[in-house]
Image (tube, rainbow, N blue to C red; front, side):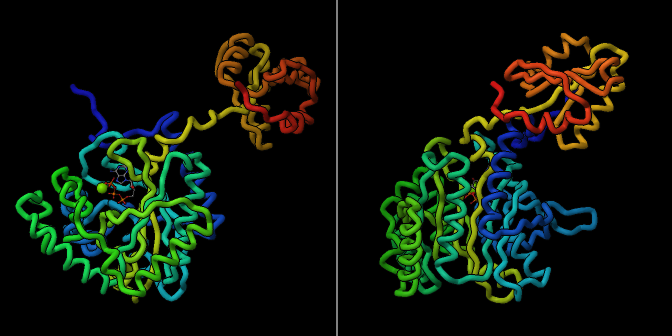
Length: 419
Ligand code: ATP
Ligand code: MG
């Protein structure tokens, strides 16, 4: 019988992979909290309409990447390809559209049927922020600032670059759309089949094409700058002013349109050159129309999502877990006493382990190999006297400590990292 394999594009998070993943999520959660965000968790599957109606019928995600299936009741279900639509659905169905602003942080798995490669998977994970309610450019700058702080705390400040653009308001976009249709129609025969289809349905999407031939044509396409209304231009100016004031470095990139249809005004990406074609680490922007499309009232919002796998690949090795206390029985007759002691230590908040087998020497070797901070050695005679040997595995010092004082003595050990 052939052995069972993980599904293509999925991976197990074990050991260093899981430590990196957790490190990213922990840092993001901590920073998001500093900015006043609260964590939401929405289901990993939704009615298909939550995504197909809102992400844009010509977006890559909707046309090619969704995991959509009929469940046993015959309903069309989709594994979430992203969470912004889910959060807006949740805002509406939980009756929160009158309790604004809502500041939402999330972390979890997303699903897209893509060609798997380094940094691109079919089940991947994102962290994200949604700031729902404020229409002010200050909000755009604040979500970017929070993203930047997360990347900085992960040690990625030198690895990523912020690129921003504006997609304008409805009037700017209508004018820009006409200019793009004019330009791309003149190059229609050279466009990829996908992009020819986008020409009438959503020409801005062509700017986001990954096709090499399309990219050459896109390089000379008109930019939105000349088509911005006075208000849209002022909005963009204000966002850039705030970023400059906060000393967040950025470059303008008029080609950023983002893959999904619901964006307006600010669009931005934190990009890196270290991950080949998978260069976008974090992407987001303003999406003032999405909540209304979900059936709620007109509600401005801005946010971003970031790929955990891509950040996890960029971060330096997270500190290995150490600081463990190894409880070691000296002789078989102390085994039960040692087991009871390790339980007491855990109850006192001390991370501790008892080796399952082996003599004193073997267990001591294992404690050292595992980077334990200290060893507590307990013999039957010592247990009877209510004492144990405490060995500091960093300094090598050993001394007798009463069992009553042991938790305090262990907490008091200096927490220098173990080599
Ligand atoms: P790309 O251009 O790389 O396909 P995207 O525009 O489809 O990205 P978004 O929908 O904006 O990506 O998702 C935000 C972030 O989620 C991306 O910047 C990336 O870090 C991550 N991401 C998206 N798709 C995948 C995937 N298939 N595997 C791993 N990470 C992904
Ligand atoms: Mg994509």
